[in-house]
Image 1 (cartoon, one colour):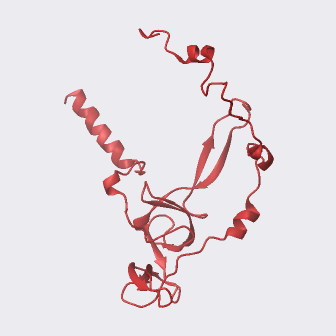
Image 2 (image 1 turned 135 degrees about the vertical axis):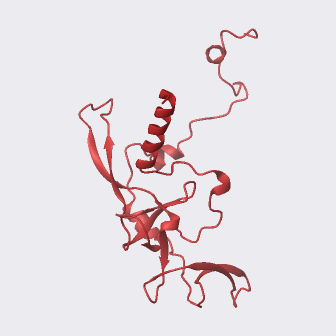
Image 3 (image 1 turned 90 degrees about the horizontal axis):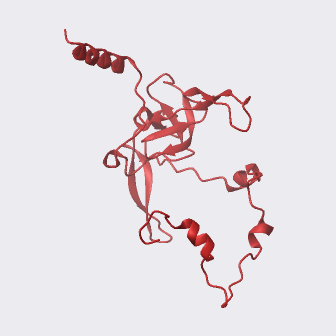
Length: 198
């Protein structure tokens, strides 16, 4: 048997045995209209976390996947940083779960259900709004509202944040005598020294 054929067979067997992880989804294959949003409570229908429920922490639209709080946990190894070579550690974090492996939960029966969008006209304003309903019923699954107060309470300034006082400080005063472009020395540094137009 030829060596190239043997190498090809080994490659094929190895790729079948290794777990596949979606790292890229073509734009034409990405979901255009999502029925699951951040904050929804979902039921995991397949995978190692099958049968468990969780809250959607983040929607990865470019991967057709979700991050669910404390579900599908994996260990990530962090290499030593240049500033601190001893800072090598392992952390637990959520791995993406494909959207086809989860279902929304019926707020009444607490069971996984299929949903669809339906246009509902507001009697007060007369405007049409798209809302989620359980398929075959009149049960609405409202979208969770963001907790702005909780976000403001949990948010803390980091050392890299700019203070409001510095952001309001005026650092540029336009002057008609000063041209609005860098000096010639800086322009010379930005020019390509190998260009024929230099």
